[in-house]
Image (cartoon, rainbow, N blue to C red; front, side):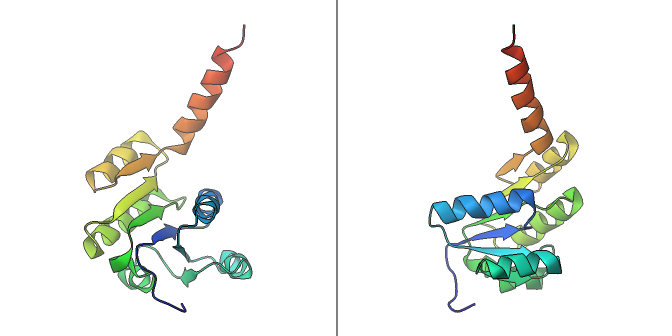
Length: 140
């Protein structure tokens, strides 16, 4: 990285959720660094000229390469709930003040992520179900 980012957001995972988070951060002019392990996605990220750390977001050394000590927030958006939990625990151990936003695929994991220190946990399956229910309830 050219210059050391400070007060930035770390985005863990560049799947559907991670890519959307990146778009929103870019629209708001918020500096961020993406952590990704998949070589195909890394290539895509680099082609878009996005700052990227290659590695596993559950690893202390990978998070340190993304300057976690100076980050204001971390968005943990991987598809694997266990990895999200490990990334959260590792991130908090390296920067106890960091704001953590993450995702969970079920309510049990959501409560575990909250217990581990997540500031906000999105449950995509519940969000989609709620939206569908709202639309269906409007039908006569």
